[in-house]
Image 1 (tube, helix red, strand yellow):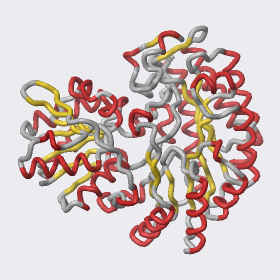
Image 2 (cartoon, helix red, strand yellow):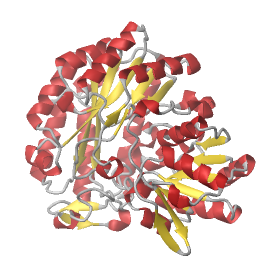
Image 3 (cartoon, helix red, strand yellow):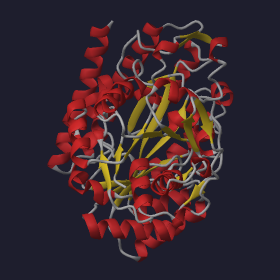
Image 4 (cartoon, one colour):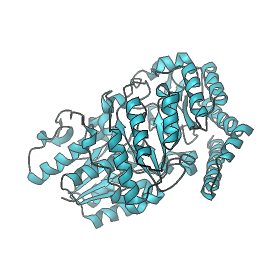
Length: 483
């Protein structure tokens, strides 16, 4: 069976709106992992169309690609903020190839598979981890076996939607094959996180763990992974990095899972192995500040880590407690100082306009941002997400605009008409003006400009810097024009 996998129906440039010039170019890790699992199980006619890396989402081009590959099954990742474009694309595919079955997967489908069928012309929906579900679906179709034997699958039968039941999470992640980067080999030189979030190319993304033990009110992670945390071993990760260096000449790795340093023993073993094998490679990771210590951070720095990203969310303890964030302002301040002392740059993620946020609590967040040693700032306006603990509670705390519940139209595009939530006592105009002002205050400080200039060591660094500040200028101007 020939299988075509589509990464998404939107590019990061389109999602990032006003920040499009700083948008990342990253592959769909879920699609690459599913492709690898199919190949491991002797399904070798697998093809990947990656919207970001191929940098084109014209429906005609995708239809032409499908016509060339002649697949027997299409799989596509569905994200909430892609649903509108996924609808158009899938209708075109169904019109052009009416007998070609399509399975949708990803966060949107897992959170509400019945809604996915109502919104999109899908034949099947994968619910939960898709690696084994996709492989078993292919084998069931090949062998004409009943679909009810494939756990984690929803499908239509006699006009009804049937769900085969939840699939147990994969316990041993080390049993999984490496992501199928060879299927997009020619595009690897394009891969990068957001501007200023990498040092050297070519680089690859790695997801070293799945799940998060925490349950923040604005996050749907608990539905995707059941609150369970599983991780690859340090040995597996270093073997994989060595393989990618050998195959693709990789010079940097970005760990893209939720909290790379959650398990202290694992991260220390990982650093030791990198140094034992003399693997000279830059790397960065997403972390939770609670897990930061001088011992861990010093070892990370010695092993090549130069940069981390962390979600602080708010500079007010009452808001942090309300959202379920296992962090205090005092702890965050202490841990950021540890990173700073060890010369690891940090990008901080913050959210304005959270439920219960007031102008006073937002001012606390602004003070925190400006008074702590952050290298980069990512500041968004709160967006309602399906499947979060707060989804049905938001109306208690403000005005909800469900028609804008696409994840990004207001928070990144700077569009006051695109916000999905505005809290009591606040306004869309105030939130976006504040977002603009904080960005300008943060990046135009002399100390910040000097810090970023000191990080320049190559011509590529100069180009990144120009693009970065150009993206900021574009965002500010576009925000004013939209109003």
